[in-house]
Image 1 (cartoon, rainbow, N blue to C red):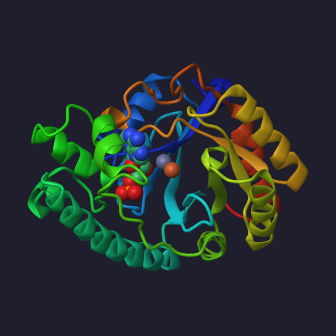
Image 2 (image 1 turned 45 degrees about the horizontal axis):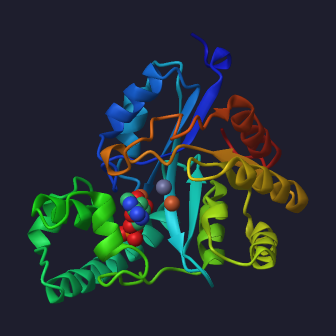
Length: 291
Ligand code: AMP
Ligand code: FE
Ligand code: FE
Ligand code: ZN
């Protein structure tokens, strides 16, 4: 089947290279089985799953997009950015990621201290063994707590210990959003603000921040995300139009960490139409960037 006859895409997917539970090859196989036209692997703070994903997609009608998800500090919640169509040689992104991995490691150590102080210790070895790739974070701590029998689910681990504001939570030191957008953009990526509607902030702040980031090279807003209400999607589309940003969307699939999400679906019937991909590619052509 030619990809043009396929109707849906998924431009936000995690694998076990970061905090998902499936391998990149499995994700590609599932995306193919779901009949998607395109899928992007967008792991947190790592590009380690991309070669395996590309290899697995070779020869399939499924279009594979190399991506990543990077966290920036925000005046309210942290802000997440997706870089899409990452080049194979992406030294400035690699440097940013290495720095972020160091900060992550420091923050993980602090969180393990807090967990120990709360009487629910997780050892560095247990944290390490809870993941596969180079990224370790709160979902891996949640797994370790489940494995120890301290909690019965990842959700409970976040609610009682790890979630924003919970007793073991430590904020991660992260770069300024402008830096992330510029580094991704100058590497030739298409830059998407991930799930903007999930940030708990005044409307005017979000609008001004997005307008400002557009000047730095922001290309698109994630208007389709499983945690949105239909009203939030409409609002996001409207905001993108007013600011002059393109749209993106995906399931934010993490495998078993976030049950109930399927590739290309996400919860209650999330579907990202193929024209979203066509628009993004048209934008890349207009910018003189390869697809
Ligand atoms: P970290 O990057 O270490 O701060 O962890 C953030 C990741 O934790 C997110 O990308 C999600 O994958 C996951 N996460 C955040 N909140 C929850 C939650 N309430 N339940 C399950 N996973 C969550
Ligand atoms: Fe995640
Ligand atoms: Fe995110
Ligand atoms: Zn994500």
